[in-house]
Length: 142
Image (cartoon, rainbow, N blue to C red; front, side, top):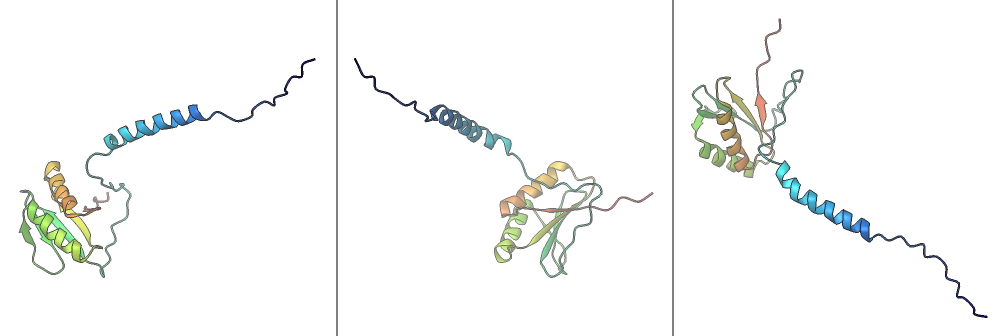
């Protein structure tokens, strides 16, 4: 009589298909992720938002855009100085290197084209600014 060898069933799970699926998903996310991030990131305030609190102890810088699209830099008690886009990047970049906690606020006339505002924000981004506050006036209460 022949003795049969009794084999126990193997209870190991084959994870190779799961690894293959995971690698395919990783490649898909790596390819599509850069396509999702475009433009300048702006936190748009809600209608019922509270006013921006400005810490008077910290330095803040206001960039104002006139109806004609001219940029003026207002800092503290200094007289506003007119600058071009390259001047904004140079000025803000110099101040940021000395004071990384600088708060930059942008104020623009309502007739200034959106493209002009984006040009100024692009200059600020080139200078190293990560966030910019937008100054608005509260609507008249009826």
